[in-house]
Image (tube, rainbow, N blue to C red; front, side):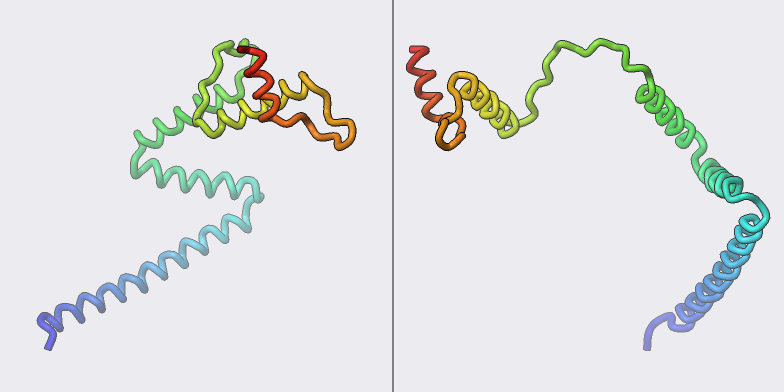
Length: 140
């Protein structure tokens, strides 16, 4: 037979009893929330419910929560500050080569478009490789 069978059965019974007590307490808690919801205005209920949750969090780690709140308010202040500051003239470095390559190709297409007009028959823009060859020969 299983060693400590009686101990294990007893512990399982205790856990079942605690689960029943927890369920009953949660039902009582739901009744309290329902009573408040029926008694006060919806906006007031939402604020009260959030205050109860916040109060519970503060009991666990008040210092961490207050530090987080300070960071949130600082971030909100920064985001809502007037945008009177002049933009920095420092260019942002490209993040990756593929993104940079796309920008370069787009710039080259724009240069090709400026250098030559679209094909009058098809309406296509000039061929980029041909444009680059002509540009390289002109530079040499």
